[in-house]
Length: 527
Image 1 (cartoon, helix red, strand yellow):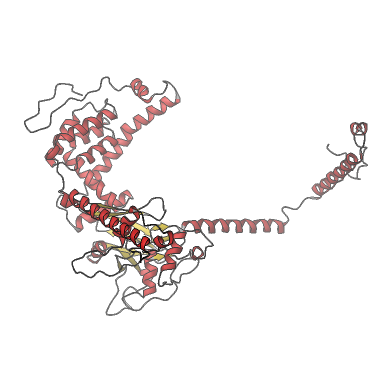
Image 2 (cartoon, rainbow, N blue to C red; image 1 turned 30 degrees about the vertical axis):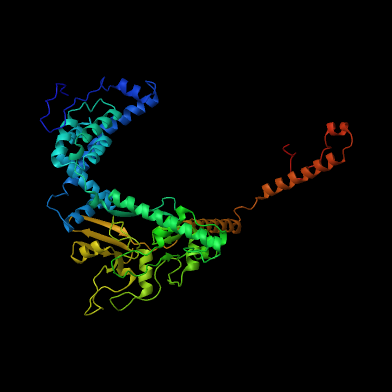
């Protein structure tokens, strides 16, 4: 690499600070950095990892990025962009959101960071560093990204350590400061709901927006909670009706609710202002299909909320106890398939729609993760013929799936073309003219815990059948010689037991038992 002094930066550009290592990265210095003894199996493993990441991994990454970049076009908008993202997700076997990110990263890498991408192909810039570089410049303008590209590519990337790279990169990106492309706070208003990864029945709501609005909301919430708490204290002291005692906990404990509990209750149970727009009352959908034993307290298999979120059995029982009604769904006990016959109308029956929600709680398009339990649309895979229903696809679960609104619209427009094999239940998806992938229809409504327990019971049952078959076939029976040996061993065991049970003096114990007459056909015992 050319080590000459970099050209000075033009006015308004970040400085061209040379970033060089104190010593080259050689085999010896690599082993020293790794902290392992030279000429050992550990040192050899470190060398192999280093060479593999520098050659094979870098080559595979670069080839994949070039292929992904071929799916990106600056003119793509709307449905075309969504199609390319679906094609990328299908090829990567990942979620749609991840496919969209990889498409964007590939476009940035090849068009706005070409010099650093070339250093990746050379093996000088590790893939992990390059991916961090892409994430670091996403909020920069195209011109600023190219300026970062020129400066980072000139660093001694093949020798500097990882901490030096990250530190210098942060300094370089921070140089742009206020020039960095940022969304205005008003443009960042959003609400996210994230279920707990622990499956403990909790979730987190994140509200993001301009800081004055968020602080004002927090203060209003705190003031409301304190006002309710003061009213609860006065009601308890005066023996008056207790305000905001929604669950009766205050009356039962004789103490006002804590501020955190009141803040939660006010935020989740107060009326929402919608400017006069009438909003229908939402209702929980608790899908307890096979775990009816959970409701009876005979199993701890979790229930599923919205078809994707596991909730503890105790919470499931409490929700069911408060539910005003139940929707019964009849399924085959082995296959999980819907039992009633197909509908002859365009719209599926209520029970059929409920079963479909349980089977397809997430959009059926490969890679899409949008929950369609409540906000989604039912679609005929083979189009229903409104004029002659007998000619088109039937309104049956074998010909139905749930799609999000975006992908339903794309399918109606002919951009997505699914075809289901009724024999195997596999759906073959054609994503425009870009990709073809297959998905297997979900018919298993058994929870994971019950599935494991049923599998264990089935394996135990099969083992019992095999054992009984061996017994009936006589495979486990003793041969005549084995039976005779067992009888002889038993005879000698009784003889020894009787002798030592009768012995009263140590001399008799030392002499041992008297000989036992052998059984005809048997030699002396083997002990």
